[in-house]
Image 1: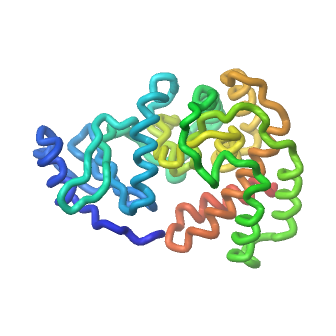
Image 2: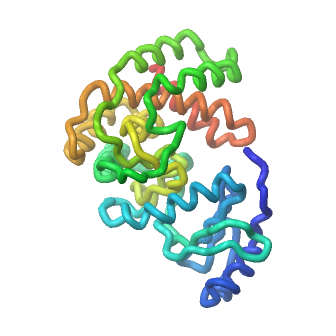
Length: 293
């Protein structure tokens, strides 16, 4: 995990609130999560402060601030659209957000009780999200792109993992996915980082989708890779049928083949960058096993 470039503490959050959102400054503040890009602090019962911990994350947060309020009204699951936008202040150099607190636990720790229901819910969400993106949608050089553009990354990650993975099986699966025709439709809106640690489960059901820092546009197969990360094979038909019903275009077999390729690529990325994050390592291993099965 990259080192923080700024120490985000409850004291810092309280100072920022006092100077910019004084009506919130009296509320309790506690750190909820210290992630790869952002620190999340619970503010009272109903809100969360989301503060970048490094400069690259500040640029990603700006994308959330611009686009989530635009997309939120048409999405069938709650998303953390910023309710308030903070500015740089003493001891803190970047914009930050106040977002609603969304109850639940991440699906990586507490899977939904009914995975077929989860398949339908997630597919409906993605069908609503995957609409033609704005011309000035954020560009992400790693997500939504043609699979072939990730060849060098696949090679690098396999080198890192060595004998921890079956290189022959990985390459056979990867080459089959890359051989599939690329997406030739208009770029659609993408979550960009949809894995079980960015899906909330409350009262045993999928309840929200969080962390849109990688929001971008491109091939919808990127997001559809979540099927191999969360759902057993027997629920894939339900996922595909629900997505087909919710989509503005007609998904074909090439889309699902690319989605499997994306699941493979992301599983290797998770495994290669999780030495200090056993949760992400577990997601990577589960996804790789599902893809190769």
